[in-house]
Amino acid sequence: MKPSLEWQIATVKAIKPENARVKTFTLALPHWSEHRPGQHYDVRLVAPDGYQAQRSYSIASEPERSGEIDLTVELLEDGEVSSYMHEVLTVGDQIEVRGPIGGYFVWEATMGGPLLLVAGGSGVAPLMSMLRHRAAAGSRIPARLLYSSRTPGHVIYADELERLQNAGDGLEIFHTFTRQAPEGWAGYARRIDNQMLSEVSAPLGKLALTYVCGPTLLVEAVANELVQIGMAPNLIRTERFGPTGDIV
Amino acid sequence: METIQTDLNRALMLDGNAAAGILAEIFSVEMTTSLAECAHCGCQGEMGTLLAFTQAPGLVLRCRDCENIVMRIAQAPGVTYLDMQGMAFLRMERALV
Image (cartoon, rainbow over all chains, first blue to last red; front, side, top):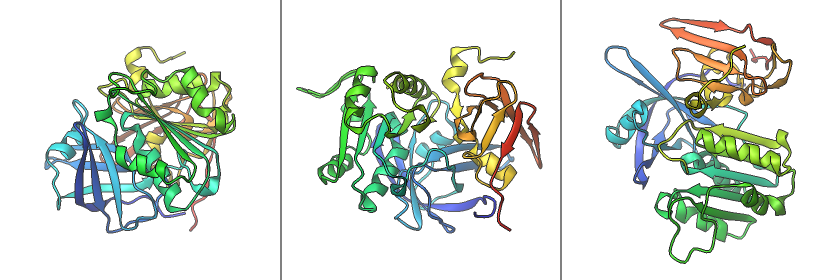
C-alpha cells in the first residue's frame, strides 16, 4: 500500500484528436507508478485567485507502458476542466494530476474471465486500458466488447480496436450505431437492449466479469438489462461518466 | 426519507469510484473496495457501488439499494467535514506504516 495520494506536475507529451469532441492527452509523469486497468487520475486546475476545478479521467493506456499515461477526454458543454484541456493545453504544457486512483472498477489478466465489456461513447476509455493490457500481457482470456456510438465518425480507437480483434487471441468487438450506421452495415444500429446484450454475452456465459462504462443513463439501462437477462449481479461493475451531450 | 427526486439528478449521478480520490485523501488508503453497511436498510457493499452526487457544494454518497445518504463530505480551505451518520460500519485496509 502506497502512502497517501500526492499531487504531481505532469507534462503534456502528445495530444491526439480522436474525433470532433474527444482528444487523447499523453502525460509524462515525474512520479509514475503502475496503474491497474480501469483506474483513473484526478486533474486539478488552480486559477491565480485560488479558485480550483477538479475532474477525474480514466486512464486509457496499459500499465505496461511506463513513465506516461494516456487520458482520453471528451469536451463537455460547460466543462471547466475538459474545455481547458481541449482549447488551451498544448504539448509541453504542465498540468497537476494525482493517481492512479480506484480499485473497484478494475480488471487485470490475473483476475481471469471471460470478460464482457460494454461501452457508450467516451466510456470506452477505461475498457481500452483493459484491452491494451490484455494484449500486452499475452492473455487469451475470451473477451467481447459491445461499443455504442452515434455514428462511425464518433468511434474512438477504431483502427486499434480492429487490429486488436484481428490479432486472433480471443477478442471480439461489436459496434452499434444509434444515429447513423455505415453504408451497407449489417451489424447493430440501435441503442443497446436486452436482445443485443443476450446475443453478445451468450458465448461467454452468465458468469462473465462484466464492466459497463459510459454516460450515466446508458450505464443505468445496461446494468438493469444485464440483470434481467440473468448475468450474475455481483460480477457487474459500473462506471458512470455523468451526463454527456449525447445519449449514445 | 430523502430520495433522489428528479431525472436531472439521476443523469448527474456517478459511482463511488468518482469519490475515490477524496476518500483516499481522507483515509490514506484505497477505499472503493472497502465494505460499508447502510445504516438505513442494512445492506452491505463496496464503496465503489454507492451512488455519488458531486454537483453539490459537497459530495454525497447514497445507498444503491434504498438510496438514503450514507456519507457526506464537504471541504473548505484547510479542512474536511465528514458526516457518516448513514453508515453502520466501514471496513478498510490498514495502511502499512
